[in-house]
Image (cartoon, rainbow, N blue to C red; front, side, top):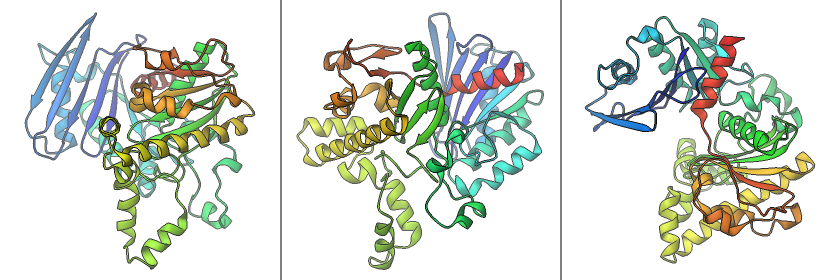
Length: 399
């Protein structure tokens, strides 16, 4: 079964094509700068141990043009991997917000599309782009089933005490104001991988997804019981450009005393804060370079970043009544040894005995960076959201 996975962003389309049940992609790619100057599609074809990379440059006016260009690459006589778009039997779409309506992967029909549109106000930067990807895919892959995999679905197992806010009941009942959580596809994937690695299906795991966006989840026997992101993606940890947890009084002070408009506050907390606001850089690689130059702001930013994560580790250890492993994943989590060391230092009281040498050693795949005798394992587990999406789609369609 050919399953095509699409992750449609505001100005990009990430994709992978699988021939299930094989979980090795036939090809993958990224269309970038859609609607902007210098648009480019990077298309990778994997055959055995060899990868062929093709770049197509030229203005891509919109997502429809981008997806048609990708379909053309898929069927290209030289770099294609299928003969016809009709070969694809299913298209799996990452959809960021499913609200309370979707707790599982779902075949898309008119009612599902209508509900995704209803949820636009809860994810105004993501759901419209995800919806557009669905509409365009329906035009191109006319014989395929369209399937939605929701980022929020994994966290629908949280109990009310974890997802409710202490505000009037009507705010929840009438307006759906509660914590939903995000990065669920990644948290689900790495927690499954960790349980297999530990040979423990009942493991209590704290998953730490650190990219430009950052979040943590407390996972008990494969079920999310709490997560750091809430109603929207700005809460919880310090991120590339997002503030993370902040006293709501600051928002009122900015508006009432400093004359900020609400949209300006939104921009401040989402796009100008986090590591960008503290250190002047949103990319952790640039923060690392500033640290090496003894930049005091970069040092403060790095300490604050790690401190916030450490606080959540303590909180989630209490929520789970103990932990078997903590898992680092995503770009920063998988690649930044300094950040991992800052987080894991002085956590021996929780049973975390960190191995600094293993942490800095080169490696790939799942690996432990804790001492052999550590009661709590510290793991690096590379995330693979596209693989999780295709597994979810295949499982649904085979049921």
